[in-house]
Length: 123
Ligand SMILES: [Cu+2]
Image (cartoon, rainbow, N blue to C red; front, side):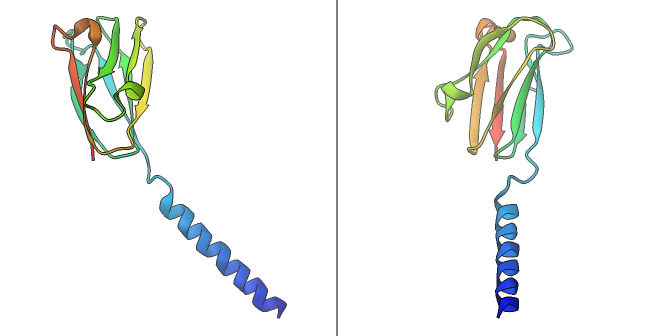
Protein backbone atom coordinates (compact mmCIF):
# COMPACT_ATOMS: atom_id res chain seq x y z
CA UNK A 1 0.00 0.00 0.00
CA UNK A 2 2.67 2.55 1.07
CA UNK A 3 4.91 1.29 -1.65
CA UNK A 4 2.21 2.03 -4.22
CA UNK A 5 1.73 5.58 -2.91
CA UNK A 6 5.47 6.15 -3.01
CA UNK A 7 5.63 4.94 -6.58
CA UNK A 8 2.69 7.15 -7.51
CA UNK A 9 4.30 10.20 -5.91
CA UNK A 10 7.67 9.67 -7.55
CA UNK A 11 6.08 9.29 -10.97
CA UNK A 12 4.06 12.45 -10.30
CA UNK A 13 7.25 14.36 -9.46
CA UNK A 14 8.90 13.00 -12.60
CA UNK A 15 5.93 14.10 -14.72
CA UNK A 16 6.07 17.60 -13.21
CA UNK A 17 9.80 17.87 -13.91
CA UNK A 18 9.19 17.01 -17.55
CA UNK A 19 6.52 19.72 -17.83
CA UNK A 20 8.75 22.33 -16.16
CA UNK A 21 11.74 21.60 -18.39
CA UNK A 22 9.52 21.73 -21.49
CA UNK A 23 8.16 25.19 -20.67
CA UNK A 24 11.46 26.75 -19.52
CA UNK A 25 12.93 29.15 -22.12
CA UNK A 26 15.25 27.11 -24.31
CA UNK A 27 18.68 28.72 -24.05
CA UNK A 28 17.61 32.36 -24.35
CA UNK A 29 20.50 34.26 -25.90
CA UNK A 30 21.79 37.81 -25.60
CA UNK A 31 22.83 39.48 -28.85
CA UNK A 32 25.05 42.56 -28.75
CA UNK A 33 24.63 45.61 -30.98
CA UNK A 34 27.20 48.43 -31.01
CA UNK A 35 25.96 52.01 -31.03
CA UNK A 36 28.34 53.76 -33.38
CA UNK A 37 30.14 51.51 -35.86
CA UNK A 38 33.83 50.65 -35.44
CA UNK A 39 34.43 52.40 -38.78
CA UNK A 40 33.23 55.70 -37.28
CA UNK A 41 29.84 55.68 -38.99
CA UNK A 42 26.68 56.84 -37.24
CA UNK A 43 25.14 53.38 -37.38
CA UNK A 44 24.09 50.45 -35.27
CA UNK A 45 26.42 47.50 -35.81
CA UNK A 46 24.96 45.15 -36.92
CA UNK A 47 22.07 47.29 -38.16
CA UNK A 48 19.83 44.24 -38.51
CA UNK A 49 19.76 41.23 -36.23
CA UNK A 50 17.56 38.14 -36.23
CA UNK A 51 16.80 36.56 -32.87
CA UNK A 52 14.45 33.99 -31.36
CA UNK A 53 11.47 34.98 -29.20
CA UNK A 54 12.68 35.31 -25.62
CA UNK A 55 16.15 36.52 -26.60
CA UNK A 56 17.64 39.77 -25.34
CA UNK A 57 19.37 42.50 -27.32
CA UNK A 58 22.08 44.47 -25.54
CA UNK A 59 23.07 47.82 -27.06
CA UNK A 60 26.56 48.93 -26.12
CA UNK A 61 27.80 52.49 -26.52
CA UNK A 62 30.78 52.34 -28.87
CA UNK A 63 31.53 55.51 -30.85
CA UNK A 64 30.19 59.01 -31.59
CA UNK A 65 27.99 59.21 -28.47
CA UNK A 66 25.42 60.10 -27.32
CA UNK A 67 22.93 57.53 -28.56
CA UNK A 68 19.61 56.09 -27.56
CA UNK A 69 17.18 53.47 -28.84
CA UNK A 70 13.63 54.43 -29.79
CA UNK A 71 11.29 51.92 -31.43
CA UNK A 72 8.84 52.98 -34.13
CA UNK A 73 5.35 53.18 -32.72
CA UNK A 74 4.34 50.40 -35.14
CA UNK A 75 6.51 47.92 -33.20
CA UNK A 76 4.80 45.75 -30.57
CA UNK A 77 5.45 47.18 -27.06
CA UNK A 78 7.37 50.10 -28.61
CA UNK A 79 7.23 52.25 -25.48
CA UNK A 80 8.40 49.52 -23.08
CA UNK A 81 11.24 48.39 -25.36
CA UNK A 82 12.60 51.87 -26.04
CA UNK A 83 15.42 53.40 -24.04
CA UNK A 84 15.02 57.16 -24.47
CA UNK A 85 17.73 58.14 -22.01
CA UNK A 86 20.93 59.05 -23.88
CA UNK A 87 24.06 57.00 -23.32
CA UNK A 88 27.13 59.27 -23.16
CA UNK A 89 29.93 57.12 -21.74
CA UNK A 90 31.64 54.45 -23.86
CA UNK A 91 30.65 50.99 -22.68
CA UNK A 92 27.30 52.15 -21.29
CA UNK A 93 24.60 49.70 -22.26
CA UNK A 94 20.94 48.86 -22.09
CA UNK A 95 18.92 45.77 -22.84
CA UNK A 96 15.49 44.73 -24.06
CA UNK A 97 13.95 41.26 -24.17
CA UNK A 98 11.72 40.37 -27.11
CA UNK A 99 8.99 37.84 -26.36
CA UNK A 100 6.73 38.50 -29.34
CA UNK A 101 7.70 37.48 -32.88
CA UNK A 102 7.69 40.31 -35.40
CA UNK A 103 9.78 43.06 -36.95
CA UNK A 104 10.93 45.87 -34.71
CA UNK A 105 12.35 48.98 -36.38
CA UNK A 106 14.15 51.51 -34.23
CA UNK A 107 16.35 54.56 -34.47
CA UNK A 108 18.70 56.76 -32.48
CA UNK A 109 16.90 60.02 -31.77
CA UNK A 110 19.78 62.54 -32.15
CA UNK A 111 21.12 60.74 -35.24
CA UNK A 112 17.90 59.82 -36.97
CA UNK A 113 18.60 62.42 -39.68
CA UNK A 114 21.96 60.77 -40.32
CA UNK A 115 20.22 57.44 -40.88
CA UNK A 116 21.12 55.75 -37.60
CA UNK A 117 18.41 53.09 -37.84
CA UNK A 118 18.20 49.47 -36.83
CA UNK A 119 15.91 46.49 -37.07
CA UNK A 120 15.31 43.46 -34.86
CA UNK A 121 13.61 40.47 -36.43
CA UNK A 122 12.12 38.17 -33.80
CA UNK A 123 11.30 34.68 -35.05
CU1 LIG B 1 23.15 57.88 -32.22
